[in-house]
Length: 73
Image (cartoon, one colour):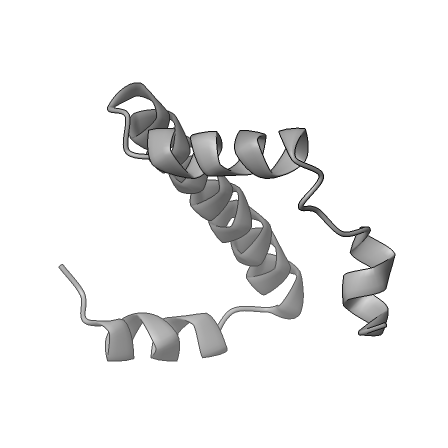
């Protein structure tokens, strides 16, 4: 297995087109890993308390419009 430093060096030696292909692949890999983690967290109940809190906040109208939050108004 190569070290991170060796991988970084090899990436720097790639032509730009190949580096972009690698970036696309890495983004897809990380997206897939995130999806798997979320599915695992959902199926094991890790997010149950969070989901219940969100649903409770929605039911009691303890939510703010996203634009309000982003604008800090």
